[in-house]
Image: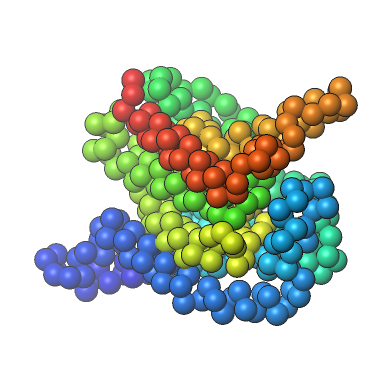
Length: 360
């Protein structure tokens, strides 16, 4: 919205700053951060009052989690509200990729909100049936995949770009939209599975979003794409403003989610943020790089898949408990120890993902 202040510029004054994506990304970051600090405590008070007993705790979960009973959930509303406000205020609103990512984020937030509300109101961990969640998620992701393909350059439409073999494109044809659906829904549910300890999910999401924001900015500039030898996708640079808002909103949320958490993000936050990461990857043609920068989420999801398949076939478990962060809890690791070590892993993976921009 503030981009339109450039109409008041003569090319060499303060208003000219609003032409620069980096300046507006900084504005989005501080706007979202301020939003989190201003509305965090009031939101938590409202959630605590309305939810009463807070988020239900699994009976079969780690013993240490029972002391978290009564903690309110739906804290993802704080993150989503912060990044939405920051994006609408600082991004160019005539950019289709901005609206694409916002559409996915808000739609998955709505699914998560319905799920959280069902859990809190019924005081059980069932929520919205899994099949309904998946169906709605795939529908939203299908729209997003088709949407993204319409705005990709002609030479990149329905193509899968490889991160290291940069001259190679795989033509997915009609399979591109189903592929995009798997990326977006997979990312949403992987982040959802990771959100099991205080502060565990939000920092890796922020790290992955930061890496994808840099990638979006790079592939949206023709001079950067020539130097880095990556595919040029005009318009994606504005996504950096969204990721800056996510980073600021995430920090504001982490202030209240740090152990011991005063609020959980819930499915409202985890599905929204995971869906956003998937949508950014599809928009920027870096779907495979998402598996690297978001590698922690991939491992968390795979640990559940492996556990379920192995248990059904043998009646035995690979892990003491899945997702894998619970396995380490069962092994006696302290919660902060798990969280910080997983943060470190996320940072390393994000740097590896960024390295693919130049590796050849």
